[in-house]
Length: 182
Image 1 (cartoon, rainbow, N blue to C red):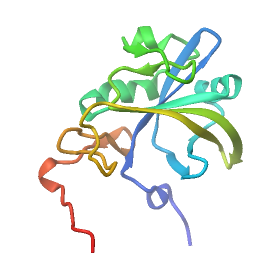
Image 2 (image 1 turned 30 degrees about the vertical axis):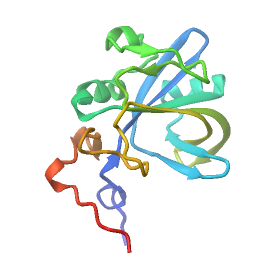
Image 3 (image 1 turned 180 degrees about the vertical axis):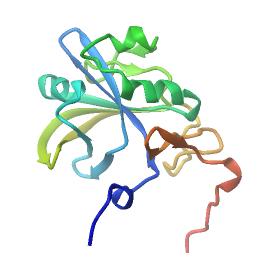
Image 4 (image 1 turned 120 degrees about the vertical axis):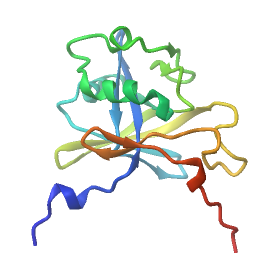
């Protein structure tokens, strides 16, 4: 049996923009390979290839954040994954609006409807990527982005979902179905 890239992708995936700061330089990159890993302790993971500039910045700083941006910021999200921070300052090049991190030194993107700040706890080499495991030390959400039960409020927020090959979608409000719990 042959496994192709077409069949092993688990898309659509919620996109995040991973931020890291090393020294005076901050950098941001779009990522689709990320997930919650544990409740106790509260852990979050992102998989990043070693060739990415952000990879070494996370190792050097021992921290990262995940910025969740709405679909209307799609061009900005995509650009963070297409321009290398090795060659330019993405904050200036993309006119990113940032704010100082709350519990870490890495600034977060002001337009994010949710931000997860993490202190690096472990790294694992997983094939051609490194899995960065961070302990969540702070979260920030915009007002009305989430319902009381912690579920994203897609009546107010249009999340950005990645399909692969620079193809993105969002959730149409008319397609939302909330089923009663039995």
